[in-house]
Length: 209
Image (cartoon, rainbow, N blue to C red; front, side, top):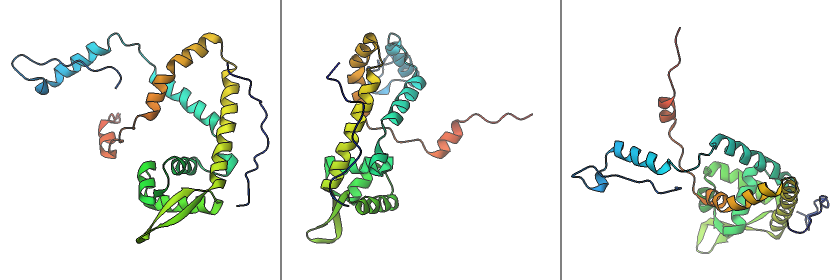
């Protein structure tokens, strides 16, 4: 384990005022691979996954959610989770136009306007005009906002390090081996959610008595 980390952190004082394995596909006799039947695709997928260790997805989801809640330190800077995410995006990819930030965070323009206003009032971001375009502006993180994110990261690291100290060596080794897979999951773009109509269509009909 790395060097010990102090369990106690000083009070928050910001500066200043302000796809797994490839699926095997079998072509039916006399057809091209691009015209594989749906049944053949399903059989190929089943064969490809036959030797893959089964993962309890619900158990994994719950574990990740619990760790995520434990690591939330956005309240240290007076931020909501959505505001914290947007601020981190501005820090890593800024200066950003408002439309680009909305696309990156997948939020509606009306929600973005309120979010940016709150970050500006807290002094975490600075809005700058775009030369040659009077109606456009970009967002950049302020020194105060950068200090807030650094503080949150330090607090999060301390909390996670304390949690890791409770695990036995064999579980620490398993967690270290799983890091590449977790990183790949974190970097993957989530699929678009299905339309509401499709969700309702897939739900079983209510039983009548």
